[in-house]
Structures are given as structure tokens and as C-alpha cells.
Length: 275
Ligand SMILES: C[S@@+](CC[C@H](N)C(=O)[O-])C[C@H]1O[C@@H](n2cnc3c(N)ncnc32)[C@H](O)[C@@H]1O
Image 1 (cartoon, rainbow, N blue to C red):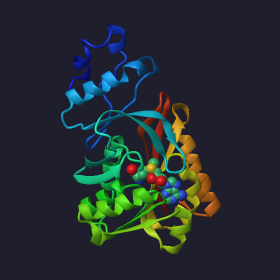
Image 2: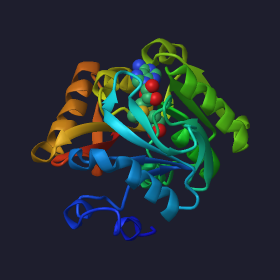
Image 3: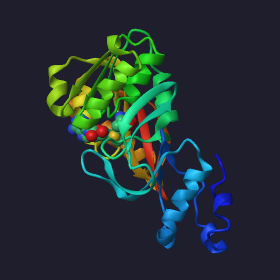
């Protein structure tokens, strides 16, 4: 990663330079900065330095506040470059067209998505709940011998990009996408060999329906947010409680920490099997 601080050396005081983060999210040609409060007045200078340091970046935005609401969107403020939030990201060998202002997408989850598709076996029918612009769906379809991959997403904009991305990556024959609420769509579908639940803030409310629609010996990947002190038992407990309620037997395969939410809070994935 080019050294952003080197481009800012003559423009910021030494104490301010120490607060600049060299690492930030890059989605295709869009940079998404997190600027500490102390540097708010310098954010345009920092954004212009980002454009100078990274020739592939065409637009720079700053994230204002955290992700909010059901669609998990973030308010963005334009800082420099073109005023365009639509871009094409590349991860794990697939292309994902999306609008960062209208669709949830985090490039930080690329290695976790790889960890999931590497577990998919030949002939599986996989459901990705909360599928967004379809990164999990497309990577599973592209990199595995899954029989069919299904995605359900409530955000119309995300669903539109997902449909485009399926074509862009030439996986149409293996993929079926639905736009709507998981609780309304899933009862119309059958059972799956594997269900992915990438909605860490709220997936617990969907464990019951996931358990109902997982085949015998099928696998589920349940995402959750937890403070460090409660990892992994609080997430495992949610899974066990849902299984008891649904009268299903489960076996925990693995729990992994796969991202950071706040200084001492993490994204956790519980991989389990319905036995
Ligand atoms: C954390 S994002 C994950 C998106 C995508 N799987 C990814 O990895 O980029 C969660 C997604 O779930 C969608 N969502 C939230 N509640 C939903 C529901 N009840 N049914 C379907 N989609 C839902 C949101 O719109 C959002 O796109």
C-alpha cells in the first residue's frame, strides 16, 4: 500500500500526521476514509493526498457515523475526486459492481468469504441469506462444484446489482436470486445442504428458520457480533438455544473471529452441522 503519510508530511503537523491512518477501505475506484475527530478540518487535504498516493482511486468519501438500519448502510460525505459512488470491486477472482452508498459491501470480508467457499462440497445446494450484491453467492458458484446457489436480499438496489453481477461473472446457470425478506421468501423454498447467514447484527432472529430449512447433516454458518469477553460462548449459546426450540440436534464444527466491530468487539462465525 502506498505511503499516504509521505504525501502529507509537508501539509500536516507532526502530531496530526501521527493520527492519519495509512490503511482504509478501497472498493473498486472508491476510497472510504475514517477520519478521527481531531483531523476533521484537514479531511480535504488528506483526501487529495489519497488521490495522489493511489492512482487507481478516483473518488474519496468519508464515512459519517456507523452502519444503520435493516439495510446496514453508511452515510458517506464526498471529499475529493469524482462524485461517483458506483464502482466495480474485485475480490477472490470475481467482479462486484455496486454503489457503496446504496449497498452494504465490505472488502475486509474477502478472506472470510474464501474460508466459506472452501468448505462447499460437490453437489451442494447452498442458500446465502442476506446476500447483498452477491459476493458469497458468486464466489461459491464460481469456485465450487455446488449444484445451485440461492441468494435472498431485501434491499432492491443490492438485488439489482447482484443480478448484474451474476451475469458479469457468468454464473447465471447455477444461481437463483430472490428480492425480499428471508422470513417471507424462505418458506417457499425447500431445504439446503448449507446456509450462510451473514447478518451479524440480527442473524440470531433467523436461526429458527435456518434450522427448519437445513437438510440432515447440512451445515450453517451463523455470524454474530460479540465483545471479546463473550467469544465464543455467547454466539454458541444462541445456536444451542435455537436448536432446542426447533427440536433439532446440532454439532458445533468451529467458531472463528472474522472481523472487528469496535476496539474490543468482534465479528464471530459459528460453523455448525444439523445432525
Ligand atoms: C451485513 S450485509 C451482508 C451483505 C452481503 N452478504 C455481503 O457479504 O456483502 C446484510 C444484508 O442483509 C440484508 N438484509 C437485512 N435484513 C434482511 C432480511 N430480513 N431479509 C433479506 N435481506 C436482509 C441487508 O439489506 C444487507 O444487504
